[in-house]
Image (cartoon, rainbow, N blue to C red):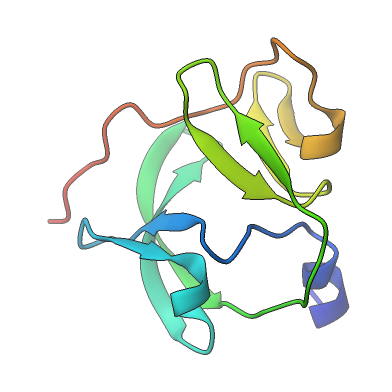
Length: 112
């Protein structure tokens, strides 16, 4: 994809925590400028968490963010166009309705 495509694909707030493959947590802002960072990510084909590589994290500027809070009390801040995976596939945050289901990890795997 082109850089302009990535900028329009949705953003997470810089203080959003990311699970690194080594089991630690890091704010996504701390990944800016780093390449090939290993994180846990959802594989939509298997619906399982797998180790994945973030090729590059970058700042796209200041944007309006919204807080998504789940019934389990988990929260994340993201732009309206950030996609979340649910029973109907990927959906933008601004198209989710109260009561929609999204994928959330129960337990994170350990790095082997």
